[in-house]
Length: 114
Length: 109
Image 1 (cartoon, each protein chain N blue to C red):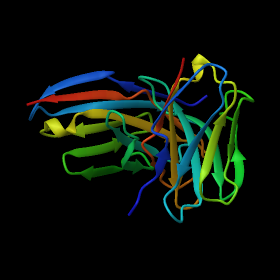
Image 2: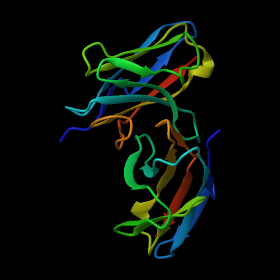
Image 3: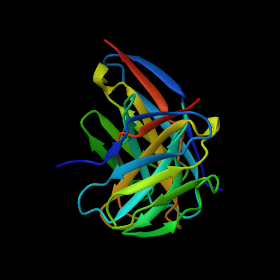
Image 4: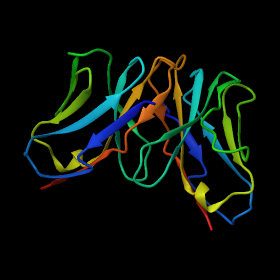
């Protein structure tokens, strides 16, 4: 079946612009996670949703980062007033039930801030 | 704070040359140790979950083992298509996931 999909795959933004990254989880998956992956590093947790509820946003690096999942399916990660240090790959993962289940990742969105 | 350290950072093998990747961890209440494979430009692909010391899992040429302090990913007779970055992650008793930086494996024909 279809896996996790993310769009766009690549995004170039000028410093100060706002960006929105989209994640379509595996159909029927209750939980959704966002991660940030810097070059040569492992993914770092940003935030977690169970259905439409954002249960953990402890990894969001600043109040410029905002995530939503209004209908418990598609999620959007928004970054306001982008900075160069925001350049990274943003990965989305979903799991069938809660945070204890195996996470399946999408291909990621590579964000470059100039 | 939970920590995951993977070694070596990079490993080059000849086709057929077996080896092991190491994942050392400290975690507050292990709720699972995960191995993922990541190809360039793609997201991590799930391989294994291990839950308790002594547990082992196998898939084709890969075998993962777990002790109380570390996990090994053994690769037997690797092929060029096994070339990828292998990521290890731990989940703690708060269900937080922490990843290591990965081992970049290259298998030469």
